[in-house]
Length: 275
Image 1 (cartoon, one colour):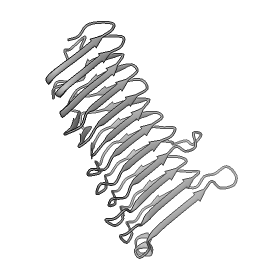
Image 2 (image 1 turned 135 degrees about the vertical axis):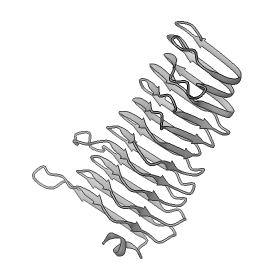
Image 3 (image 1 turned 30 degrees about the vertical axis):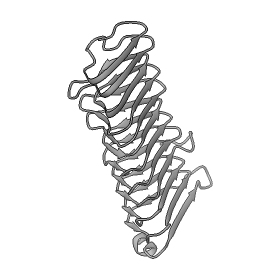
Image 4 (image 1 turned 120 degrees about the vertical axis):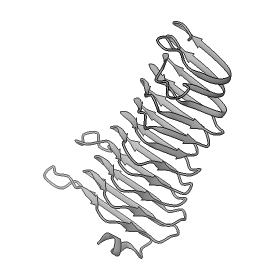
């Protein structure tokens, strides 16, 4: 019983290695884990297999850190709750593993602690469960695709990947800057939102940026991509004090105009029109 065994301990460290004969170890945390408050740490490393979090992890209200790492996949199926400490997950440490992605299927909650999700060789799937970090920063980075299909609430929010996909349930609420950086393209869907209450929003893509719901109430929205297109009409595509739209080799709003709610807007389309 993991909950009873570790209930009075300050830290937990679990590690498994690949076994002889080419097999691999695998960890499934299936029960609730409660650690006492005050400088706790949870460190789980699956060196050779996948890591499944199927029981809730609760630490104290202080600087209590949670680190989850796997050579294969990291799958979060129950909430992770901590205080002002950080949460770090790393999947795909071994590019040759069959499963190398991160699957966020439940919530991660901190009281101002940072949340960092890294997929070294795969994708990040935020399919359900919100990220709630208070004023803490949230950072997603994937060698493959980042799929945003739920809510992220935090201070500064950074999303980086080869491709970024955000569906209508994907909503970012930030009290600082929001940065999207894609090595290829960004595809948002109608209903998706990126909101910054006091900071700026920076969206960059090497290819097309299909955007909507970008709102910096007290800042600037910057979109720089090969071309910029309208992703939907549920919300204004770009809103805030000001915006700068840069299409380095194409048009801005070629098929459908970019809907704006702005005090000031500037745009440049190197290879086409602005609508």
